[in-house]
Length: 117
Image (tube, rainbow, N blue to C red; front, side):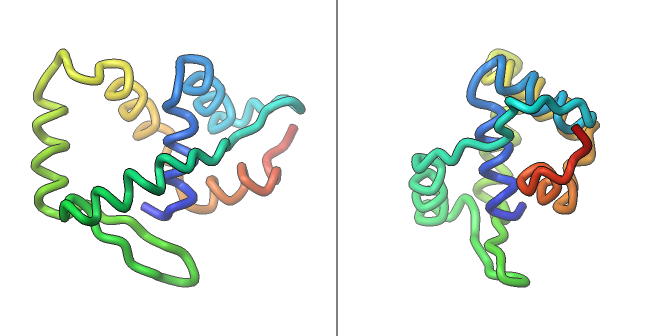
């Protein structure tokens, strides 16, 4: 996942209203007051910790940083998904995003205000 997409998903996942807004934006329903992304510096720190713990790796591709789950990260994600009481709202949001096909081009459109208002 490119770093920009990680920030977009993290921003969207932060609370109920943000989740609804991001899903609405991905459906093409954009309002003038919508801010699709709020950069949270704690995500960068969490990424650094995840890299140090070998849960993810980061690679530079085409002038962007791409994050990839490593075996330890995949195992942790599997444990979270298997626990039906863990991160319930976040898991539902991730499932809703999966259906939206959050492509890199779509992320760029949202971040550059290229979506039709």
